[in-house]
Image (cartoon, rainbow, N blue to C red; front, side, top):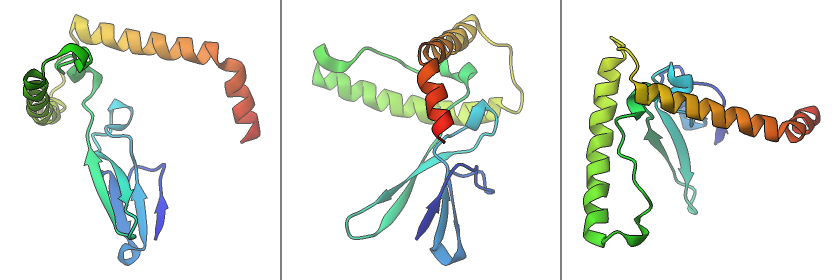
Amino acid sequence: LVVRSHQVPPNNEGYYVQHGGKLVTVFSASNYCGLTGNTGAVIVVRPGGSCEAVQHWAPPFRRMADVIIEAPPDATPQAMVVSRTLQRRTTAGALEASSKQAEAAPKEKSNRVERLEREVLRGATRLIVERKQALFAYWEEC
């Protein structure tokens, strides 16, 4: 089995099987760059040699504002943790369906989405600047 990556598979799924199952292309970044609408996947290889592709999907930034985000469950009662987990799963499925429908007719960005995008870009910029020397060194070695 040969597993390759770093290319969105032609079927726009998180993985693509070729050559009678001897070659698998896997791409873990779902909705690549917020533009492609592809699913992502990981390949789980078990000790006995069997493997399974597990797919996932991430909504675009403008839909992330609808995601339920909460503090870690350290002080949360177990029943509430279970309830919120089920709520997140339900919300995730509904969010995926509505996001894919909304992609056909994009709407104006909300202030919350614009703020999320700014915060993500600001954080990424800060990390790049802080680690500039290490990044240059890494890319020179490649």
